Image 1 (tube, rainbow, N blue to C red):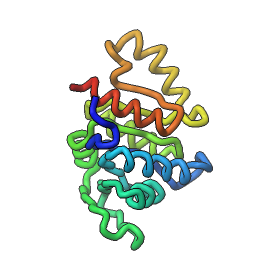
Image 2 (tube, rainbow, N blue to C red):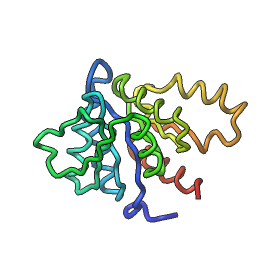
Image 3 (tube, rainbow, N blue to C red):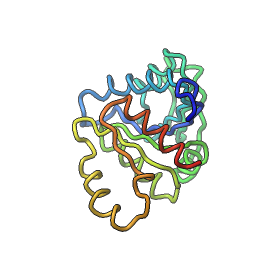
Length: 183
């Protein structure tokens, strides 16, 4: 197994800080940004429809992490994020294809409906990437139930395609694991 501190794994992260949802999402995004930066991940952060995961990007950069924003044409990064590389792709299908081509895994954080909607858009586009969901406060329990009841019976090795984590460290460990399974 690769040294997780120097992983070089590229991860597409789906996170939202807009709208109703988990009140802890900003601090959770910050924790993910710091941990993934310390582990040496390159983070691709999706920003579209005015949703930018600012706490995630800020924490990752503060911890010395590598971050790239993949955005629609409407996104303008705030001054605090100046210097963050941005790849602007006007068509949603192009963004989804880019995220799949550049990443080893998709990670989704609890928050608002925007984060899970973006993930499922990318996943449904035919992008064959494993997905790891941070199931904090049982945010993805319905998806976990679907995976256990439906996918397990009909999709061989479904556990290589979808994983659930309860903590940020566990999220990272599962990203490393699914990356190793793809090799």
